[in-house]
Image (cartoon, rainbow, N blue to C red; front, side, top):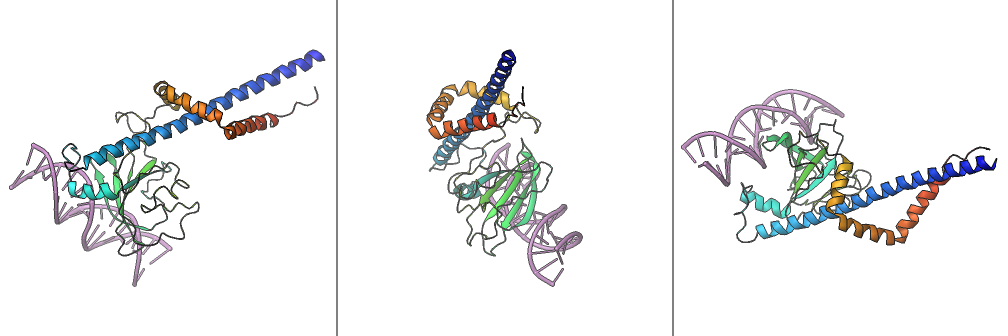
Length: 261
DNA sequence: CGGCTTTGACCCGCGC
DNA sequence: GCGCGGGTCAAAGCCG
């Protein structure tokens, strides 16, 4: 009887250990996700500084992509990019941001096999805002929307639930809530493109993706010190540890109670 | 019937 | 000057 009791206890301990290990891993992944976001932010800032340097008096001389410097200057001053993850099966190039858009053109561009759609804001007749939408080359489920200009009218009141009325006038605000995979930059700063697909540099077939675990491993190797920093800061966070403890406790209490042994 | 999408033609700037 | 590529125009068709 006592032996049986001990066996059950040992089994429980094992289950708890496994569960703890699973939560630990999940926690680690979340930490790395946080780290990735932080890193993206730094990349963004680096690009920003580089571009600010480029548009200084002798701008344009070092960038071979400056085919249309005049329009480039305008877009550099006012463009912002938003990444939106959509259903890969959904082939429409529509980004629901609360505003009404009228499509006025579509083009296949050289660097991306998927068509680029051109939209104008149709909520006000004189609204100068334009939007370009194109699927991400590496991941066709991601739409890249480039906004140019500022709305000269009030944002829509009937914006989609979740308050995601994105406007270049109000970057960040309202954007995060509804876009599954949002990244934006200040519309009054140079446009920067982030590769959110974390894929290799264009050698893939488009749907090729690195396995998350491999990526995590690479990332861990290259950012070990900084990860440690984040780990330290998170473990110091009492709210975080309390939440983790609550999650562990919950998972334990959710275990089906062994019936009479 | 009005507003929207589609799509081929056109325009414009740049590199060679 | 010509070709290329991105951006825009506008006629035709579709839809509610």
